Length: 242
Image (cartoon, rainbow, N blue to C red):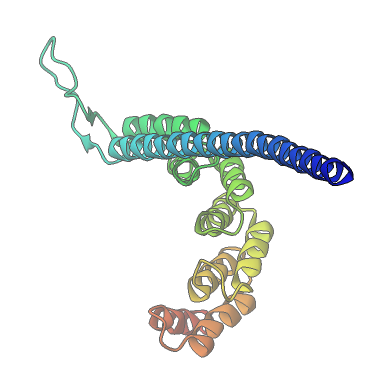
């Protein structure tokens, strides 16, 4: 009898163990199913985001290309025949084309503020403002590009553009500081010899002949293979004769 009871108890223990395993398996299965569902959901969201991001990038590129097309459109004098209209895709003069390009670039920059094409459009808008002689607006536009693009090529180019704008505004001290800071960036996106030439020219316009000669001399001494060397030497000779 005792043997039968022990056998019965062992069967109960075995049944209970099997039951516990089954319950655990079901729980783990539910957790596994939930985990798989979460992974699939995340993957789906990530995939949808990538698709949306790629589509947005494509749209930005297309819109930037359209703006560049406007900037490069043909200049065709307005027709003098009564009732005739301007040919599509052309502009009667340079200023009209620049105004249209500016509007197109600004629209792309506003629509895609953080994309490469949006930043490129913002830079082109700033450069167009300089061409239109709207210098205070250009200064702010270049500063906006600098704040949005950081250390990228457009950030450095915008800083160069800002310095050139400051020179045009006769804010020589500010321009010289921008050029000087850029010339210290040996690994920067803009070649240092190019920056030094612009720095030297800013010194010349500011009436600082000694500093201008020193900047031109740096080009000759530090960048002997530069395409600017011949011009820099000529400038040194010219300034030495003043």
